[in-house]
Length: 415
Image (cartoon, rainbow, N blue to C red; front, top):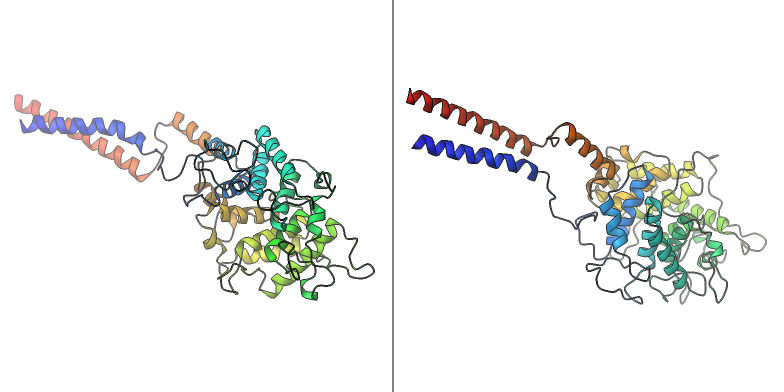
């Protein structure tokens, strides 16, 4: 009787083994299908998803279809995007729930990965309808134009092949560049702030804002978040704002970008090659890794590779803390990937970190990894190689051996 019970138990064990192995490959269920990152996406779901897709595409990684589907599925009926829609079946609030920055980032990402022309076209239509009379954009439709939102919109237009100069407000004929150049601090500002951008126009004297400046410096080059590295340049530093003659009144968008880059280069040189955080409540000496990465991209877009290499080297340094800041955060990882790529660096060898591998790990497996895994399964049923799977296989082998020994012993008893 004991032998029979043991045989039955081992047989059940073997049967369980036969069905348990495939379960080891199941999804952990910690994130909605297709979404990057496990943190609450309430405020940055679309933004971080867009940056992740852009970064992967920039370095030749084909994102998973589920990741692209998730982003496209966040689009509102009128073409705009909210920060995040937990229930995509509920209509968006056009006046409060849709954001220029989220829409612009999503347009850039969907345009980069391809195959979503209808969504991209709807998004561009939303931007055109939301443009202010001064040529710029606010955070929400109808809001006061600010440098960050306007710059993001310029990037979206450029990513879809549109010249921002040709996207003018119907009532005034003003372009996004008119709005941006109106926010740049000119020759009447203190010498150390000339060329910087204010976040928005307001009462009193405009104040230099580093986040606005890095955004505008990139946008006035007609560039979005992702672009091919420009290569080496002649090593010249960015040209400061020219205040002779007409005092820079006739400056072009390229002149404005050069002046902004000169301000950023000088500011970073004085801070040990990085920008400092301007977040309320943060330490004044705390580095702003995201803004520094944006500055690297802006310098690279302005074809100042030598100037871009210095803050990039700081970001890659062990003592900067940039890799630790970005770890596990798809948006932060994407920014570092895009900065390294733009400046001609290798994001797979970012100091001691492989940023691309880390970014891929925050979301669904990229398409080529899925294809490779599928091919491996066709050649070999078990391609997992994980300890848990091999433990199951070993347990099954032991169970099979146990059944054999018991059956053999039972036969001997019968003889």
